[in-house]
Image 1 (cartoon, helix red, strand yellow):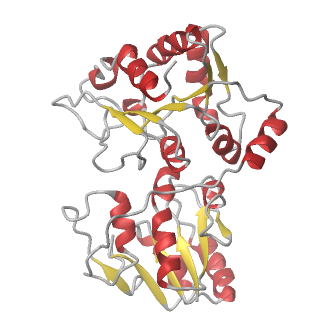
Image 2 (cartoon, helix red, strand yellow):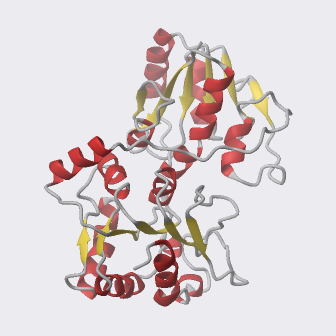
Image 3 (cartoon, one colour):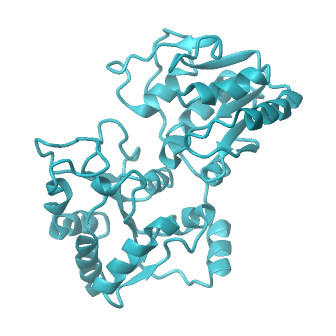
Length: 336
């Protein structure tokens, strides 16, 4: 059997889909499973043993581009896939597999996808509160119960991968590394304040820890602010590593302090100790899937609001989450 995954456009969502890929291999021995994915999430798929090849999806968020989708569909038709699992719920994500003539197209009914999806699941949000559960349901027949327990996502990073990345970047691994992931693509209401990260960095430096900051080029400015507020305590790697390189360097960390972000899910899939900070979002929907994660949330009456900006203007859910609280969680995972 030869099948295609239409992957999500977010790093964290793609990582949470990995147990689905493993389940499909179990159900279909000998399966060749490829993934159609945006180039910014391709590196995490390339670190999954379940995925044979990643096919580039050249579309940006929200981009329709019917002519380009037709050309991509012709390319996929030549590959003669037997089935496609379409993880995003949009109509445009289901269009290419339909135009490619892939005979079995599996997904949730979503937004007006009748005909585009021909193995249709109906989403029961109460029965499947977690995103990972919703992905896993697609491996089963529509309406069938979801087998549990669900395995945790896993990414591959070997010692050879890590050393190669250190060599490429001209870095030496410190004896005791704490990683910070201060960004969150969704918006400011998911980002712990830079001043709090800086206070934590100073405390960790006093305890003999090296602190490296990870993120995209968009996170470089906030990481620079943290470094400015904690001079000599941090190394800013935001925007200087590829996603694949960040995977390898995060795998070296004793503990990772992160907002609810794609890199949080990377850290969880690497089985590293995590301190995850939640403000406007909910760990009840997209928690770090790891036995080594401590989730910190003040659980204020106004949260989770799921807004990009604090609608009340105070961001108390994160401003009042103190560096001392986070330091205590870090020291639990990384004792002196």
